[in-house]
Image (cartoon, rainbow, N blue to C red):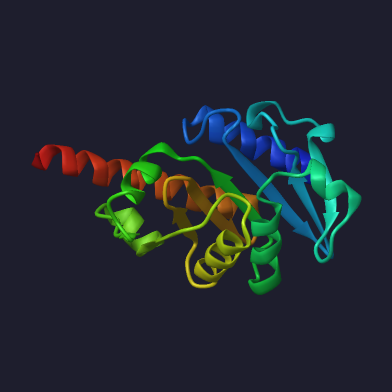
Length: 185
């Protein structure tokens, strides 16, 4: 039985907030379905997503509904255009943001992060910009997640579960590395 995309988006939005990966208003989620993208509206509370909080926009080209979608729509579109990913999650993950000011890439020191993620690139770009879209999409061709300096993490996968796991693993690895850095000082 097919699950409506907005229900899957709502499920993982709640998980992002419940697990402390983001504050309620600090992220966005999308899934690709054919030539369309289901994406959270701008300003959505990730732990209270309803059907009305998700808009459907074309994969290519602009539509009148674009202005309702997340300000990161451009990034999501670019990821889908140049990768095989079918789901993207973005969160203003606090430990990843902290480490993004120190590193140009994050190398997980925990066994799971090293195995599952490998090196996590840190890229530049203003929120919603063409530069950010290009940098994030390019990094997600070869990585499960990418950190945007001072902004947060984008993670992608075949479905929302895979994308969520990559986001969660990235933040976990960043917490562990941050803790290790604190021990060294």
